[in-house]
Image (cartoon, rainbow, N blue to C red):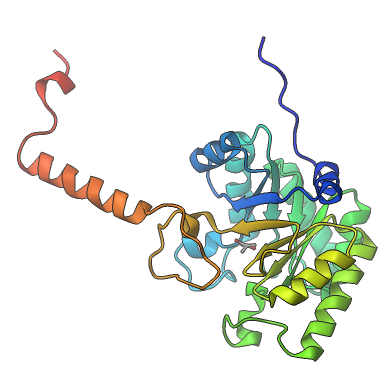
Length: 270
Ligand code: KIV
């Protein structure tokens, strides 16, 4: 009989921080990739609202809807046997209205079967975070470059380089930890600040463009697989060149069909 696979939980992640074992997170949006990632041993699958960019082709993460996030969440949850699945709360579903935020978080948990939700921001969304946590839903925070605020930032530059913004980030991180978030994503901030925050918090930090001292790392799947040639920030390491593989496969397929090489009789039925 096959042994039962032990699910990664918020407790597992807390224990990993204590053991200083790096946490590995990747984004996932569909069943096929999520199954491969889960089988490879990725510990946390983030159903990121970056689906708005890499799946739907929008310029920003703002247009993706709650229903669309739940759709992607469901597909990933069906595939994940070991990984913890975290679903991003989309723009507009939790800012400014904590009752609405709880309703949206409950929909994500009930309808997708995810294990946690993620929200962007600190003090400005703390009422929503507290209300969601008080309903027993684990919340992951996200500070630094928070893409849902991109029009306020005016671009994708490194955040918290100035001391006032760095101080605000420290306070936000402390506040999120105090109200009970189980981990915080730190995006595109100086490595020294990420180190300081990671060492001062009792909960894990997961970095993206935040240097090597975070308790874990996350990348957007399509970027690290080399599917998106147009996006080349300094922090991105590409682990494959799938754009080239897909292009070569399609070129070969076109050639074979045009030359009547495909299908052969062996690939046909009698
Ligand atoms: O939506 C996303 O992919 C994210 C990661 C960049 C952390 O939030």
